[in-house]
Image 1: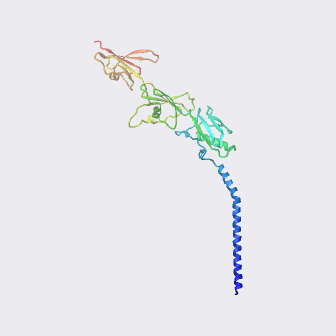
Image 2: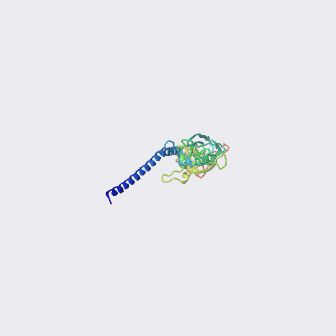
Image 3: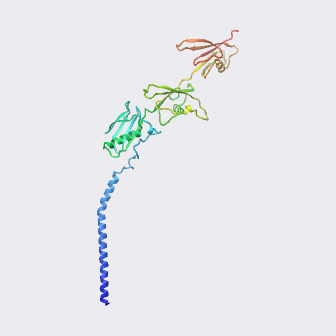
Length: 319
């Protein structure tokens, strides 16, 4: 092969390589230009999608339609007459409602109308409201929150001989002993027992029946099962005033004393310090008031029973 032929072949190969390189650069440049044109549109679309997401860094949104800010397990408590609810829909301040449950148990909520809430929990009411808003196509995926502002339907009362009688909110489960502790404990005039008054189902709130009587016997080592039982909404714990008896006359320690179970005259004489040298166990009189209010004098022996309010009087010897 001549030198010219070799040069021509080399030139032809070089030209082909240059043509391929130019075409490759042109294709790459076209792709970059296309990406630059579409990038702003895609960026705006992504930003638009982000704006449609809940702004969790600004407004705390719960994962579910739940009743928030409730303490002591109140979120699981049923709603009843007299309770006050604050209902809010996140992102919709116009739908905020402050309602009080009436006797009918029905409330009127924005857009959806009347809703029966009595006997339901705050979580259930929030779910019902959210469902009605979505079914009515008012709001897509609404997030409803309910805060119990006041829950008068879940209260209990401690009355009688306690240091702080009154009505207390029933948050969660509270035992009889815890209820007495909230009321400051039993006063010195209180009886060592209490009565539990409870409303029967379907009865008005003013009609209470005695449910049980519990003795207030505290043990440093263990808690009596009666004191550990849980109270129910609208229960009334009543601590009566301590019942007393009186002993006077020829005893060494006359005065007023608290009643005891199965109290008789012999025990009264023992509590009073015994009969003096001038006293006679055969001349004992019990002064007792009857149901009609009359005062009776009863000649008593040492085995006779003594009732609350009795006045036991020991007379002097005749000789």
